[in-house]
Length: 508
Image (cartoon, rainbow, N blue to C red; front, side, top):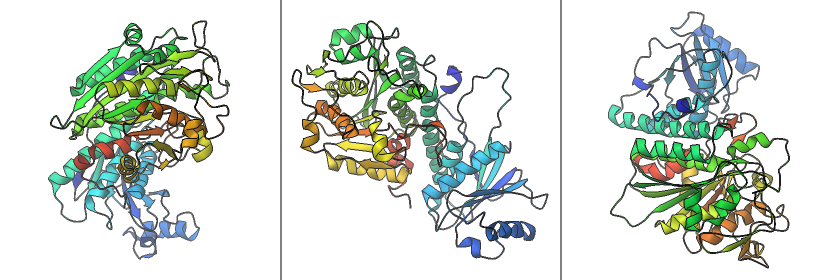
C-alpha cells in the first residue's frame, strides 16, 4: 500500500474536444439566472424534470448543489449532472461543481465524463478549475480491508469548449491543474497513513524518493548526526520513541542567478501522544495527521518538480514521534537548541514548535533569506477559526500579502493573526531564553505558539501557517474530504508556481 500511494505521476485524463461521444455522463454547470431561461438542457423531458426540482426548491442553482438526472436513452449519456454555480461562475464555484460531479460519478460507478465549459469566465480559468476539481473529487482514503471489492475509477474527462481556443495554451493549463491536484492528493495520502506505517525514518525515505524522482538535492540526518549538530530540541521530542528522529532537507534551485532562497519548514511529527503531558485518548487517532505540515511541503515539491518555477527553495522537515517512555522529555526540562537558545519545557505536548524552531534555524544556516513554516500546531486555532480557516502569523506584513492573494486564488481560506509585543512577552521564562508554553494556552494560544517559532526566525522575514484546524477533518466538508485535506498545497503552488500556472491571484 505504501508503494502504491507514492507514485509520482498521475496519468492525464483531461482532454479538449467539441464532441464528447462515448461519455457515460455529462456535467452542465448553471448559474441561478440561467435556471430561469427556457430550454435549459435542450431536451423537453429533461427540462421538465429539472423544472420540477426547481419548483420544489430541491435545486436552486446555489454553489454546491448537484443533481443527477437519468436520461433514459434521450441523450447519448446515462446521466446529466446539473451543478449550481450561484450568481456567477468563478474558479471556486467551478472547482466545487467538478469535485461534487466526480464524487457522484464514483458513486454511480461511471468512468467517463463530458463537461460543458460554461461561459462567463475566462476559458483558461474555467478549464483549470474544472480539471483541478475533477481530480480532487476522485480522492479516497486508502483502505486496508481483506478482499475489498474493486473501487470505481473516473478514467476520462472531456471538456467541451463552446468557442475555438488555443489548444497548446489550454494543454499547459490542464497539465498545471493536474499537477496541483496530484500534489494535493499525494499530501492527503501521506497524512492519512497510519502511525505504524509512517515513522520518521519512512517519512525520510519518502522524501528521498521524491527528491530522486525530480532531481532535488536531499540530505537526511539520523539521530547521531542530529546530536552532533546540537539539535537538542529534536532529540528531546523524539527521545521517548523507539523510532528515532530525522532531520530532512530538500533543495531546489530554479533560479541559480538569484541569491533569494525561500526556506519552507514543515512539522513532521508522525504521531503525537502528547508525551508526558498526555493527550486525552478520545480522538487521539487523529494524531496520525500531526505531520500534515511536512506532507504539505512534499506535496508542493511534487508540483514544483513538474512545473519548474523560477525560485530557489530549501525545504526542511524535522521528523519525530512524540511518545511517552522512560526516555521521554519532561515538563520542567531545559533543552538547548541548534541556535544556542535554551527552552524551558512547560508542556511536552507543545512539541511541534520546538522542532520547527530547529528547522527554522537549520534553514537559515543553509542560506534561506525568507521563511514559511507549515504545521498542525495548535488546537487553539480551532477556537478562533473552527475547521474553516488556516491562521497566519508573520513578522513582515509585506511578505504575507502575496501569500494571502495566492490563497484566495487557490480557494483556500487564510487569515492573519496579530503579532503584538504583549503576546511575545507571554513567552518569557525565568530560567531559560524562552518557554514553550504560556501559563494559559487558552489565552491567545495559536498566536503565542506561532511567535515561539518566530523568536528563532529573528530578523529574517517569516510566516507561520497553523493548519491545526484545517489539515484533517472528521467528516467531509464542502470540497474537502474526510481525513487529510492537503491544505495549503494549492496555496503554496499558486505562490511558487503562479507564473507557470498562468492564473492571477483572484478566484473571479
